[in-house]
Image 1 (tube, rainbow, N blue to C red):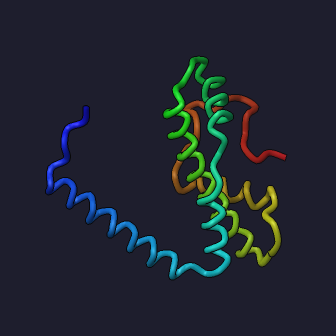
Image 2: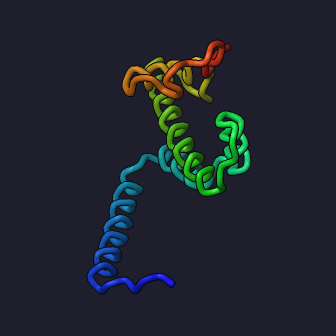
Image 3: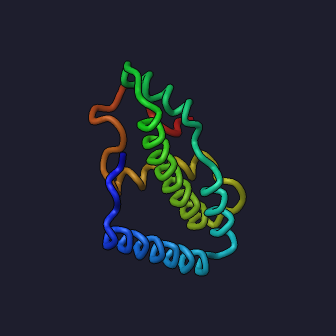
Length: 133
């Protein structure tokens, strides 16, 4: 049985929820129509939890729980979103339009690595690279 939530905890949580909703509304009001469409697509889609779980288990060599796979899928979704946004900036900088190409994604990934440092394993696995032709 869960302990009862104190009144001050409940009011703090309610205040945080209302502030979060207000912040999201301000954000949504300031998005361009293209950004709004991409954001809505981002919110609607999720990485398949079972596929993420399988990839984790293949790399770790052991079973992982569904909540762990869900958390990793959430982080992966954020990572993919960041790469796509950077790729859109690369595309705009080059004056190109249309769908993203692998070149845009490679450049976005390179930029991401420059900004954040090494991505992935501490020691790179030979022969495994992202966005390779």
